[in-house]
Amino acid sequence: MVLLAAGHNLVAEPSARADAYQDRFEAEGMALLARTATPEAVAPLAALVRMDAMLSPGRLAAVLREFVERKDATRADPLVAAQALYLLSLEDDHAGQHEQADARRRGLGLLRDFWVLGPFDAQGRSGLERIYPAELALPDPRGGPCYSGKTHEVCWRRTSPEVARQGAVVLGALLRPDNDAVAYLLAYVHSDRARWAALRLGSPGPFKAWLNGRPVMSRDVVRSAALDQDSAALWLPRGKSVLLVKTVVDHGHLADVRAPDRPARGGSAWGDGKRRGTCRRRGSLRATGSPSNRA
Image: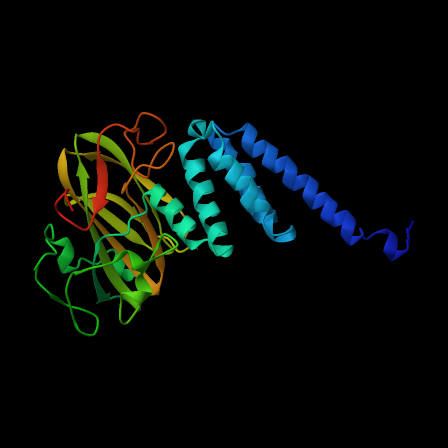
């Protein structure tokens, strides 16, 4: 048997489709608020982002704002809260509220003050396992040695916050040439006491990380960069530690490195291991390009 029907009866009217998206959006928004304190809240958050382009402008921002600014926001799972706050900062940018967007991202503790070295020659992802001079000894970028780079001599350079675009380190703006290369980022982490912490990093390509010369993270990946794609538990001694990150740059890749310039509501990028890797508001923990905690 073959069943034939008029085509117009099988296609939903545009208004009906819009109403369906609207209903689904509201349901996911309610689910996000209901699961505030659990990691599972990331599922409705992701669903809301996927539907954003199908609805009127400002709808996503309204839901995100309610989530991060509600009175009980401190109950939110810290990693979900960080994702929501970062997404809201992007919505602020889209609305032309750039100062507000920057303020939200500063609260996340995204690393903005660091040193960079490179580029070194590498073909594709092969540079990840190749050992370059910066890995041979714990580097001191202040007046340190220069090295033979991909096309010219390279030295450590301290960057300014302007090189971070929406929380991402724009390596393509710092390296020439900016493709098929390896680069290093260095920051000093200052802690007023010994503690467990979590380093969170997002990248579109392979990377390695060391703390005080000890390997703490390595991933050989190719993907679209996003916030907090990888994390590693670290034991931070009291005082100053040196964080070194190696990244393999294919075509001007972006990367984000989160570190605690100042704690965000509900937690920061680093943690003391007592609540899903979040950092409670006790003591001082910050990352900067300065070896002195007073800078």
